[in-house]
Image (cartoon, rainbow, N blue to C red; front, side, top):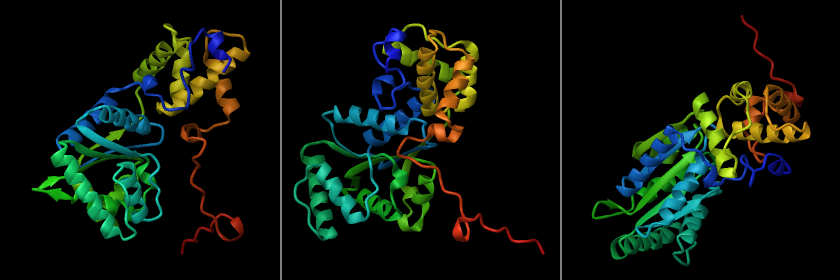
Length: 302
C-alpha cells in the first residue's frame, strides 16, 4: 500500500500474511510456547493450544515449527490444513510429509511402515519425531482417532511420535468425543489463548511499527482506546483495523491517527466485531431457518 511511503515505513506493519517477525508475544503466548516445547522435549505425547479466531494460534504454530525444524534433534512436519476426508488419507499425508517413502493402500500396512520409520529415526538417528497440526477444528473425530492410535506407537514404553495441535475452542469437544478414542485423556499440557489486554495491544502496535521501521507509532491515546473497544483486544482484529486506519489517514493526508479515523476505518470495512476477526476464507455460522428459508417458528407455550 502507498501508506508505507506516507508514514516513512519500510514495509506494512499490519499485513494479514503470517510473519513471525511481526508476531508480538504476550505473556500468554510465551507460556503456551514454553508448554508446547516442554511436551515435545520431554516426549510427553500430546500438547494442545486452543482459542478464539484471531488470537495467534497459526502464528504460534509456525514459530514452533521453525524452532523445531532448525533443530538437529528433531524431525518435524506440519499439517496446515488437516481437513482430510478419511483417516487413511491423513495417515498417507503424514507419511509423505515425513518423507518416509511409499505408502500402502491398506491402512494397517501403512501404519506398520510408519512405525518402522519412527523406530529408526528415534533409536538409530537419535531424533524426536514431531507432528504439528494447525486448524485442528477442521478435523473430524475419525482423524483424531488416528492421532490417538499414532500416540500409542511405542518401543520400550517410549512414545515414538509427539503431537502439537492448534485449534479453536471446539477442538476440546472433539478430543473428548468417544469417536476420537477419548484423546482428551492423552493431553499432557494445554493452553488457552484469550484476547489481549489494553496494555498488550498498545505494546503490540508499537512493536509492529518498530519492526516496520517507525520508532514512534502514530495513534493518539483516544484512537488506541477506540481501537481496543472495536477490536475487543483480538490481535487479528487489531491488525485489520489498524491497517485500514493507516490507509484512511493517507486518504485524509494525515500523519497522526485520531479517533475519527478509527471510526472511518470501521465504517469503510463495514465490519462487526466478529466479522473483523474472520479471515477472507472464513464465514460466519449460518442462522437456522425453517422451510423455504424462513426463520424457525418458536413453539408456543402451553
